[in-house]
Image 1 (tube, rainbow, N blue to C red):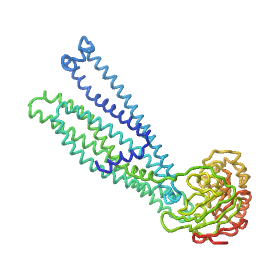
Image 2 (image 1 turned 90 degrees about the vertical axis):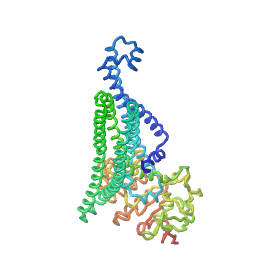
Image 3 (image 1 turned 45 degrees about the horizontal axis):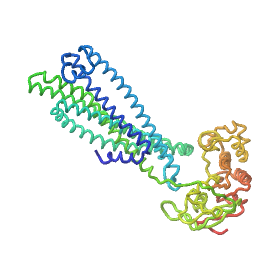
Image 4 (image 1 turned 120 degrees about the vertical axis):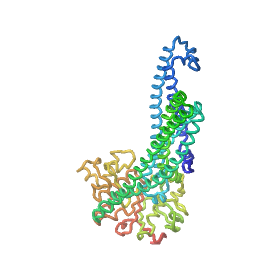
Length: 568
């Protein structure tokens, strides 16, 4: 088996938790029992037919043992009871097969939920500077499509084990009947299986990689199109985007078609070769012994065994083909889950006096420092403006202050308490953040204000009143007014007011405005800023802006130039 496939159990062992490993072990034992049941289902038919067609055989061998053990008086009653036992056994076989399939599917789909949740949690907890370098459409694909593929891979992996054990038991049975014919058949079939397997796996791995790349390109195209629809209408490049979309879907379809077609190849080859060899064996025995009596018992058993074995081998190759096709999902999820999450605590801190930054420096993963040895202090309740040209580092500086980024050097103190991993969540919970672009999802105003928190209609109404938008909503459906995807049903000013309400919902002690009014006209900006100053009251207010009119009511200004603090 290629090294890349042999690494699958190692990676799964590292990804699965203890509970799922135990469940997996139970499934393996259930698979062993299923294989034994399947083998018994094949091997029990010929003795029954033999006894029914030739009752004298009951007085010999293991027939006689069971005949005497249960005290039968005649051959007819023995054969009837034998048949009833087989019927009951087949009912049990059917029920157990269904039960095993249910447990297997439950494990597989539960594993999808486990991997999807684990990926989602990883993305929620990675450092912000790592997050901004990742593509949202790719992360969405990982949580959805790739997690599903990985659960299917695990399902196929279990199916391979089940079928392989069944084939092994049947093979042992065939060796006991006639080891010479079995060895000859084995040598020929193994050579064919190796050639088919080697070709299929290489091709499927290549197709799996192409499928992933095409899916990524498709996700990016859909994401970019839906988020830039107005621009696309103006630019008129629908045809180019459509061609990109159809090119990606064509590649995905083509890889799926080829992969599905390859899945049928082993079945056709193995069935053809298996039964051709069986007929050749019949011809050889007739030529060698000049008698059909030597042929019928052995060939009947081989036909029955191969009838069960060849489809099992075909399914094994099909499962392995699917595993190779899906392995890129395992590799990528394995790499994603190796991302180091932030280890953060929520030890309570108080904010009564000041925020103090001391010699702060920060840089992203590549490049020089964005913030360079910055020190300043903001008093509780103070209204402070952070100004500077675009790209000067003012937003990055405040992201460090409010705990979104962690400084490479320097410290942040809240009332002389150092902000660190143990109390960072407590500090962030005191921040109300209003960004330049308010993201509103397709839902009600109430859902957008609460944004995942428990909805309190009284509290939602109160913050909407403070944001001076409740009167407008009363002319619609109140707090149950639908906003449309990305707030398309609302104006820019209305979206900003909902953003203010969202920031106020958690009753923060610090309000941060990050260029929150830069895209509004002067009159709307003036209204929004007046409302912000009114609702901030005794809260600490930090306003990031490059227009002086936005910050004229602030107590003082901090100017950032090229990542450094300039005295005002």
